[in-house]
Amino acid sequence: MAVDKPRAEAAIREFLLAVGEDPDRPGLLETPDRVARAAAELFGGYDEDPAAHLRKQFHESDNEEMVVVRDIPFSSMCEHHILPFTGRAHVAYIPRAGRITGLSKIARMVNGYARRMQLQERLTAQIADAMMDELEPLGALVVLEAEHTCMTMRGIKSAGALTVSSAVRGAFRSDIKTREEALRLLGLKS
Ligand SMILES: Nc1nc2c(ncn2[C@@H]2O[C@H](COP(=O)(O)OP(=O)(O)OP(=O)(O)O)[C@@H](O)[C@H]2O)c(=O)[nH]1
Ligand SMILES: [Zn+2]
Image (cartoon, rainbow, N blue to C red; front, side, top):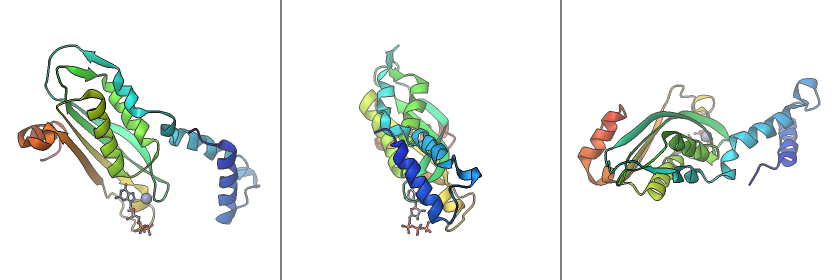
């Protein structure tokens, strides 16, 4: 569902009043409109099926060697505080019979799921599940490293704390050596 812009604008105006601001002062007059437009961008992931990006596939060879895309930048919004968390996603998979997708499609899929109200763990699992469902690979392994502003700017104020989450599917789960190879290629220790 697309963001209801008039409703978002009214809510932001109300929010400005709630925090003791004057929404009619010149500097804030256009803020509800700006925030509503920003929300349409930040929560644009509801308007798409991110997994669909992976449906553009190639069958170039019968290669069943591991593919690793690391350091995909993402920004998402924590559903507990509606504050950003940002970081990098690393995605590894072992294609079945050379069934591969474009590398940019993996990054597009990651960003589609990120542009929603999220939990880091859910985002991690959704990425892994999309890889498994759409490409039917021998395995998929996803690692997300992110800094949550709800933890750094407020509350506990743990500046620099990094949350690392993983989702492990198929051969990466059953075969320790395969998992270790992936973590080595991702530059992460096993
Ligand atoms: N597991 C998980 N927790 C998250 C994520 N984003 C934020 N949180 C946590 O969600 C929790 C919400 O805790 P609550 O006690 O309900 O809320 P709070 O009083 O604002 O908590 P504090 O942050 O401890 O001040 C906090 O511990 C956050 O650090 C996430 O992606 N995954
Ligand atoms: Zn939060």
